[in-house]
Structure formats: structure tokens, C-alpha cells
Length: 495
Image (cartoon, rainbow, N blue to C red; front, side):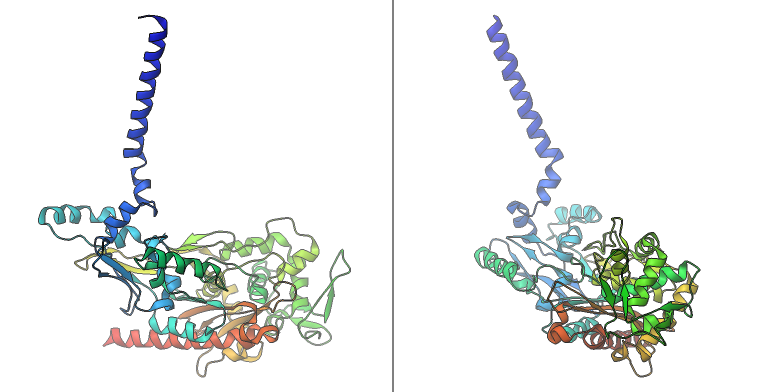
């Protein structure tokens, strides 16, 4: 064989080798990834050709299920409660794939989890139609409905947690959206519905409860207070300077209290009273004294600067990572400048204080059960870490009770129940109405629910909005619903 033929043979052999390696790689190494790709129509045909497991609330309400349909997919995914649970379920769409719990728990819902291996073998041998598992969430019907009713047409979010377990009792984002429209088997209609939602005011497809973060305003003063108490240099009775206006260092700018009046007597106030009336100047001075490292460390102990799964994804809340100058630090101390928090994060702050200082991992799934109701998964309460000492948590609880009893959070008062809370009125874009916040837990002496309410750009109150006037009443109704639900559950279990 002459040289040119030898070279040609080598090239051809190399090409065939590369082709075989590529084919083998695609069929074996990339097979799982390609199979899971939501754009893979073959996978969709296969999965929609069997009965996908339902999603339910803790009260047994079905919020996602598959029903038989006479088309090529055989089963239609439906959402009986419509937009009420859209931030929980997400959707399972022929055109755009899965989102929310439909995506996070897909392996169970579709029956593809490794825990179904022996059942799949049995189904193959017996000819039984395969199906997915039941995913039972921790959501309580009445609490979710109270969140939706409270927000009404206002844009915002509500998160309610069991502070001792981390169970999510309510997860609501407004505006909601109808998952049925995206799950339609008419691909043109589904694509049109998604395009309309993508262009809609308020970005309904993005959960304001977990995927978006906002300036938390004065609710962040809980973190600043915690840092002060944990330093050992301050108590609830420590006296702070609280003038009507604070001259910010290194600048001609000033920071003022909301009412343009000094706090306390002659502009001097205790730490407890500064929290009760939400004194901006006192907290700005306190933050400057504590320093950015103390504030950042305390924020991170509560969960800032880390994303996590519940099992749906929760975006990271942020305390500024850059080196802050004094004016920036003063603003950050009151939850402004570049401080950003999700409603889930602020609910976690309240829940940690309620739980004696221990931060619990939020959890949205109560159980996963197979076709025979056998428990395949039952997440246990998990500690994320300790944010503050029990003593600090106790002090913060008493101070937060003062906020509701005689401070800015009076509209969250519940007869016969001691509520511990904190308001927040967060400056937004220049000229825009402020965001209204309220985070709380109750009963203060035996916490059963922690809640965070966020109303974007003041809601219906617009420029006149404050956390106390707009968000606190919503929190009150959600807390009442949660306590009623917990009492009913307790009496039911005793019966």
C-alpha cells in the first residue's frame, strides 16, 4: 500500500472511531440528560402517556392531577384550584416543560425515581399501567386562602411557616396565574398563554415569595437588633441617640425618621423603644457603631447570602458584599441601600426568633406516597444553624411584642393572642411608592406560626402605604387562619 492510501485509511479509521465514540457517548453518557430535557418530545409523550401522580395540600385538597384525555398524550395535567396554588405547583407543560413542584418532584410524580425500580419491573411483568406517586405538601388550605384574600388585587407575597419544623403553611404570590392554560395540549394555545403571561404586568410567572428579592426596609432592623444584642454591648434598655435627622458621615446627606421627629425624650431612646417606633436615626447610628462585619455575619446566620431548595428553589437574599462606606452602612442598617430579601427569608428571620434562635430549613413537602400509599419519603425537620442565643431570642420576642402592643404594628393585634412583629416601609425606585412589609409570629409565648407579608409599591395605598397600615392587617388574618387550622388539627388528632 502506497503512502497516500495509508494516509486515507488512517483518516477513514479515525473518522469511524470518532463516530462510534460519539454515538456511544450520546446513547450511554448523555442519555439521562437528554431524556430529562423538557424539549424532548419523546419523553413528554412517554410521561404524559401514563398517569402522573397528584399533588395535594396537607388537608387533602388536590391541587394538581392527571385526567384521561383522548389525544396522543393520553393524560391531561389539570389544576383544580387554578391560580391559588400556582406558586406552589408550577405547571407541567407540553410546550415549556415543568416548573414549581412539578419540576422539583418530577422523579416521584412521573414514576421515574429509582425508588420505583422494583415496581416498574412488577408492572412490566403484570402489564399494569405505571403511574407516579402522590406528593402531599405542607400547605394548609385556610392559611393559603387567607393569604390570597388578604393580598387581593395587590401585588406581593405571603409566606407562613411553622417555626419549630420549618413546614411551609402558605406560599402565595400575587398576581397568580392559571397553570391550566400552560398545561393545555393545544400547543398553540399554550404558547400564546405563556407569551401573554410573560408580558403581563407584575411578572406573574415569577414567584415574589421565593424567586424575587426586595429591599426589606425596617423589618431588617430585627437583624441589626440581633447583632447588637449578640455583641454583648447592648441590651433592650441601652440608650441610643435618635435625633429627628442624622447627619451621615463623609457627606452632606442626612437620614431622617419617617415622621421627621426625634425618638424618645430629647432625641434619646432605648433600644426596645427604637424598635417599637422604628426609629431610623437610632438604628443608623447603631449600625455604624456595630460595623459592617457584625451586620453581615448576623444576616448570614439568619440565612442571607445563600440560596436553597424547599425543594423548589429559593433565591438568595443579600447583604452588600462590598466594603461599605459610612453612609452606605447607615442605610444598610435600616434595610435600605443594597440590602435585598425574599419574603421567605424575612419569614425565616421571624421563625428563628420564635424558635429560640434556631433557623429551621423551610420545607414544602410533607410526604411522598406510592400507589399503595406506602411512604417513599417523609422529610424530617432540619436545623440550618443557630442565628442567635436563646437569651437574645427572648429579648427580641419581648421587643417585637412591644411593636404590636403599642408601636407601629398595632393593626396586627389579635384579641387573646400575643403577637410579636415588625413593620417595614421600604423605599423603592425614585418616585415610586414604598414597599410595605410585616413579619411576625404568634402566640409569642408558644409560637405556632411565623409569617412575612410583602405588598409591592404600597399596593392600593400607593404613596400613603406603610408596613403597619397595609401589611400588618394581612398578617393578622393569616395568623388567625393558621392558629385556627392548628387548633382544628390538634382537636382532630386528640379525637
